[in-house]
Image 1 (cartoon, rainbow, N blue to C red):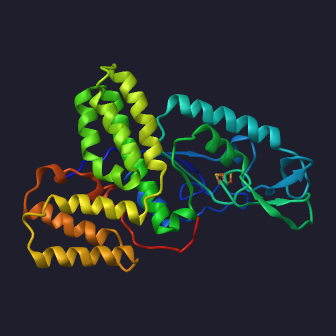
Image 2: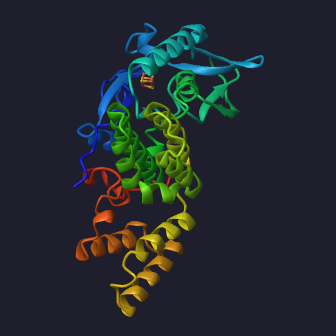
Image 3: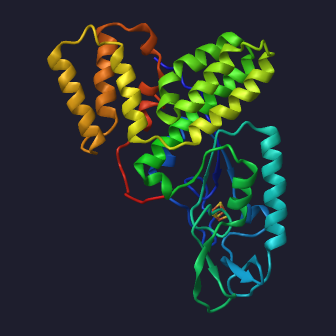
Length: 324
Ligand code: SF4
């Protein structure tokens, strides 16, 4: 059984934590509620941090010459500098102090939003412009934490986006432990256990990571870990796709080619076609292979994280259909 490291996640405080929105409300999220037991949350409410009370007048983004201002919706009082100063200071300090594995922000907020935030011509009665922006804190988070998975709670209702986010935060939390251990042995084990997971994301980065672990140049562990982290981030940022997953599944099947009979192989290949034609989720062919891992007691595959990328309790096939 895989023992999961608890990822450290920064989250907008109004999501399932505190009723700190401008109107005194809290955002409900079944996913975040479930996640509470499995991650360590650090909460932040940027609007409260710049000294605003609850409840308060709402704020909005307005176009100002070539830039965007962050102002109170009715009075127009400008809070751009306060929010930018806080965001940069808080996020840079957090980056220095904490090893964050993920960030979840409130969608479409002029402070926390990471995309699709409305922009207005002016304060007061005014229509939203056709353009969309990032909130000030959300934009700073993306700039400062360029390698950290960042999502908003709305996007996480999409099955694929949620799956990718969870897979990344648990892989990165595991890697943090390896960085602390600073031994080649633990790095080799990490790389070996994640081989097929990485293959499903990027064969090219998997090869580069393999060369780093082989360390023919006899580099020091610190240097190898730093370089490994760069390519690990690159690999995990890539979205998994069905062609790469099919390739990974066929590699896994190869372990059992001698043990399986003709009918079993044909059934599996049929299932692969169903997966390719979007008639079955990835978990169907993966579970068939995992049943072979158990049946034939294949030791190398037993610890592959592809079969167990995050705690089972977080698996939820609910999909809002919201796209990227
Ligand atoms: S969206 Fe951000 S700034 Fe607004 S209430 Fe939530 S945490 Fe605070």
